[in-house]
Image (cartoon, rainbow, N blue to C red; front, top):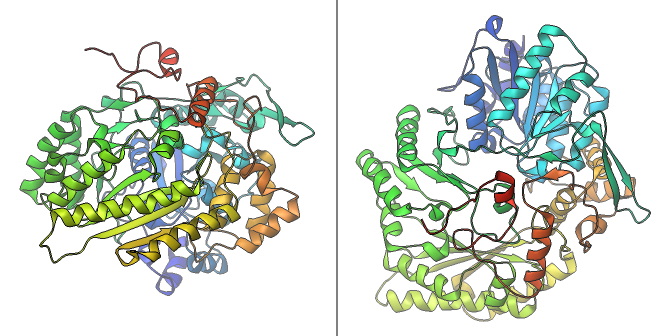
Length: 617
């Protein structure tokens, strides 16, 4: 039925190949032999979702079980969504073209806050109520996972359950539980109460939230036997964790059109603004043998001519040069490009440069985050200007003439002197280039990308306010004025829009009351908020007015150390006391050594019952 209706509309929409399925390596199963069906929903477009490694892993993992069938679902662009609604086509799985409302699970991966209205659009397009309290039947179970689950409160009212932490094991445990209920019967409430006993599963409806007179959270109280704290799941043996030996290969070009191999999880660095660096702890690596085998398998099964080594900081791999040597022995022979998207300035070497440009040379990207050493110490970046200049020198001597530098505006304790230091640093890099390339006809290209600091849960800066629009505008103008006053033609500056970053801050640190804003904005036309062409700030502003929610209360307010945070019932395995200690050290402009140098006492090792790293061996 859906196929016939699709045939009538696909030639009228952009990139119809996004909506038809049937790609190489996609999984088709006999429905009569399947016990549990899972719709894996990425709440953004096909082009973005098909680039996401987590989706590739969990898609293949579920489908490795003969009686489970996982299908892919993406957010249609407005032209397709309009055509689907006009022709009574519900949201469907790409593999079977069946309506996902008939599946057992509808699972969303929550990678960034600006996807929240897309979730409501997708549920509505599927023919389901967006509020979990209105979905009475046992199935489908609407669940979420991914980094935003560390504070899922702003969208808690829309979901039946969430998975906190790594999903490879817990997803299968939930599907096994669902199969038991399908065989033996039971209600959704009974299922959710059982699911809440699985480590890493958070069922919002089993927690009551109360508030103080000043609007802050008073208490988060579990009921029906739910745990007081939901403990995140981690994979202990990362080297043997499931990894697919093939990916679905799209018909159309996607954002990251290449194969991807995960080399490590976690981060040793402890940058105080970086949520990922904390919530993905502990640090774990795959062996070189495992990584090389996975590179070969994916290259052979997909036909991609580029492979990317994926992690939060690939150059922190313990033997990065040995790993690159082993991989390039294979990729060079095959003519396959090797991409390292996450390089640290302070361990960038000649050998790394040689390996990554052995097949194709492109520009390099570094993230000093702050222009001055004082502010880099505040955020615990643990890199010096000497590190930056040394890495740029290696790059320029290796033939590179394009460098992109990432900085943040609005960091805690930031002053205009710190902003001016961004321009000073860029000038020094330009001068360095011309001391090395005196006779070169090529000019240097320096790009400065500015993002606005967003305070995130489970970081030492979760207590800090986000800078106001007036403060950010002042700092942007100040930097642009001094860049343009001298040497501006050699430095290109870009920045993020404050209207979207304050939304991210509200959603990142929000409580359940924020769900009313999300619902109001969605009902009045907001979706695809991460896309500039679709973002509607005036509707969002009106939604806050309609619901009586103050953006500044969530985004621009300093929070005391003893305030109960909306996410305090989530256990990410490290302590709040550690975050408080790191926040105090930031204001003292003191740094903390990375995990390989010295244990900072975050609490992960006590939780695991063993040290994250064994020193002196």
